Image 1 (cartoon, rainbow, N blue to C red):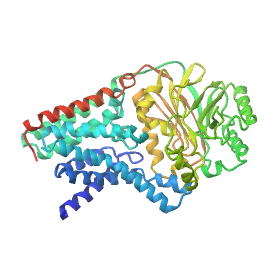
Image 2 (image 1 turned 30 degrees about the horizontal axis):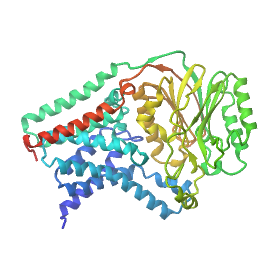
Image 3 (image 1 turned 120 degrees about the horizontal axis):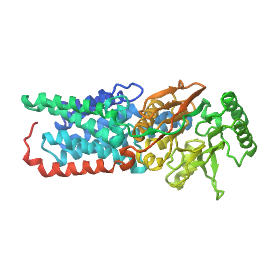
Image 4 (image 1 turned 60 degrees about the vertical axis):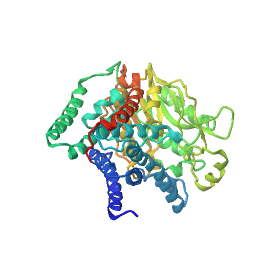
Length: 500
């Protein structure tokens, strides 16, 4: 029967998980993630494989419970389901995510039972990184709260153009492993450990001198409109005209020779449902020699019931983008036979969308190609990399009102900051009421609006060309390195001194 020490370590694991969330936006206490990961590893080293799994699961409950609790807000406040149902669904979602740190801990102790320096320095970060990568794609993927995102304003962010967010996650876990090694290492090696970690951080700062991409052409004046329209009211019948007038009123005086952008699902009608509205918008944009990009539902060409979640360009801008990566249970239902049951349960207006094709022509404004992503899509690193091509900047359109007043908006913006650093491109983030901002190629927010308010942001987007190492090669090299490290560690485990 588990003793008091076991329960204490389970609770302590939960505490370290909660602590890790404070390293992310909006808190930005980025060094805390090292304490969180080091605490996690320290507890795992003191556990059997079965205990490690349970304690890792407890860590995940704290980490994801504190970090993605906002799923409840989306389901309850805007989905309309009962409090009990939403609590159960949110708890189930958090429990599933908690299996990833649980598996990290269990695998680490089952296949590497000896607590050696290699286990701390290399095997732990390799397994942690691989489980984050698996979380990116399994069950359609949910790569939220990858620990590398905590470093958007720290020297380690300079590693993003080299290996992306996964590489930063590896280095963070590597340093955390070094901190645990410091506790158990012989006295004569402790100074060397601290010196190495300090040199690693200084080296990451020096890497910032490398310019991966370069400015190309003149900056584009942009106007980002934050409409602050309540999602539940947006889909009320016959509100389309009043919403159009709302956005036109906000955009008035901002049209001349610039690109105006409205957020995801800005209008609740498609061009085919009300062609007069879109004809009016196109005429206004052309009259001012401007472009307009806005989010709309777009009907399927085969006239099926489902629409696409799309962004459409008018005036001097051109193109149509149909969202590819949909949110499970938010924009579509994975099991078709369950759809009617869940639709009756969760009264979510945008829950019957279809996914767009993999290969689509990019949007453009003048001779500038725009890589467009709608909300959830920006969180998938490889999808952004694959679709970037020769785009001059990245456009993220979102309706973050679904997140309520939670941590999600700030976390979402932080993810967009990492995409800017990885790609060496500006990101224009336009949201309904969240974090509307312009992010430069270094991941710095250079202009923004306050959340939860109606507003208009006038700024400029600089066009960049060229490729970073990450956009050229992706993450496969570093993920392969993780697998190689695990293999080498397994082969050499019995030859190294045990420290704990």
